[in-house]
Image 1 (tube, rainbow, N blue to C red):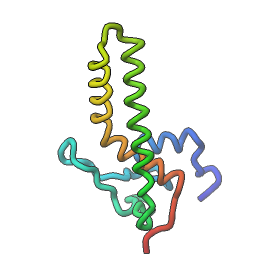
Image 2: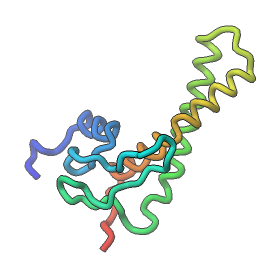
Image 3: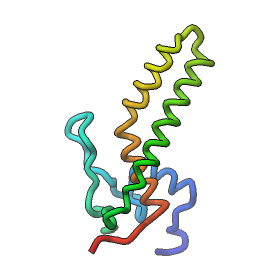
Length: 127
């Protein structure tokens, strides 16, 4: 890889948000879902560069905590924005709005947490 091919922080951030390969940034990490709400399936390797997405057995176990943290952050932000920007919402409505946002973004959190983890901790490829 040439020096100018190394992604900067903004390029890496863009790759993460687009759910692209951490090595080449061209191919998607997940297959397209046939139905909404279906558990996403991660590809085995990158279609462009051959980078292996599946790592050793325990590589993605800690991703659950990252996904959980993102979910709590989104729920908290929804609650605070609803409380201080939308006046007249009861506590029950704030709770339900936060719960709806957390459930709606759960699949996105699953995907983005795995791609963030791949970019921060590359891990060893499965042999």
